[in-house]
Image 1 (tube, rainbow, N blue to C red):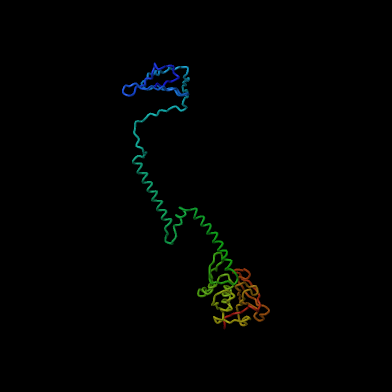
Image 2: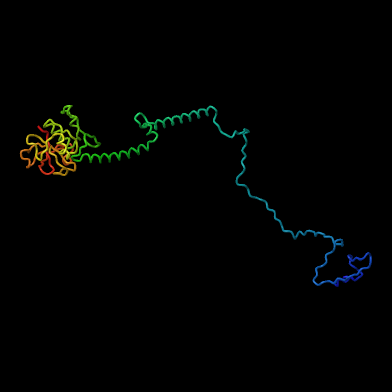
Length: 314
């Protein structure tokens, strides 16, 4: 049976080339193939005659127009040609051989001087301190600042010390304090007696009492201490103590702390007159009364509470 495509006009006279007989040459059955609606066109089988594909000629009107532009920009920096010297660089600039040696020697000398100066400035000298001039040379600003600070602190300390040690009746023995007046050479006192005089703090009431009593009697005060303590130390050295002055000679009056105008350390003076009627008042010579440092003043005191008179027996 033949498959016949109804869309074709060809009949059985034009059989499809692919139709073959089956069964060893026996006539086969031809089957007609009806065309299906909306079927895709049949592609030619391999071996069928096909029309060759011929490329169409290019149409110049269909091509995009290309406009060639010429670069008219001119460079702002013109190239500079540097002619070569023809010498090959070694890569490192070095001074001449002779000058290089001089530079090395100079640098070595400078390092030696710096090292030597540093050692002299840092290492202690014979007195255990670094060299002052070299220290100032290598560190002038620090030394100047330290000096100003030390001066300020020293002045403040000296002022405080001077105020404390010059209080009436204070005596820690023969001391020298900055800012406090010291004793002048005692030319009228024998050399053997100068040691006994300088045992007390110059300027204080104790210094005057010891010196003046020695002038009147020839006896030195053998103890030390603040003025108010003299009343307790005198008996330990064999001296007389009494609530009234010595009727037969000079005596030292001892005022306890805050007695008849004395300060916290007490006060001592030498009785000059008034021993016959002491309750009417005795006239005394003093130092450092009311701030009169190393200055003689005359004051009248009276026997009473906190008042003791001491003198050498004999």
